[in-house]
Length: 131
Image (cartoon, rainbow, N blue to C red):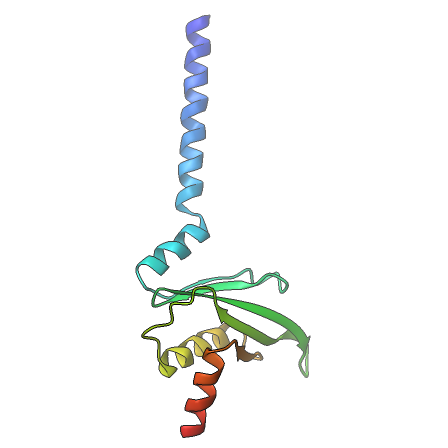
């Protein structure tokens, strides 16, 4: 009887470990961190929850965006997004990089006006005047 109990506990432990490994591998925050390390683009957002900020990483820099709901001609949509870098390491990023990020955000939120926090805001303003 004792042997059967031990086997049952071991089986439960194996199932629990497999479950935890599966949850770890599929964890979106882990994927975000991996993309940041590899300096790739990765988007983490809960599209169903307007009140929850999105995170994205691009070229090793982590950005956060705050969404604001408003009305369009036909419905309520995200109409304004405020974006800032969560890490201060913006070295090497150019105006073209921020245009790319804005394009990717506009793919998901086409009605949104994107505002950036300083110093990105000044870079975008300065470069948009030159063109």
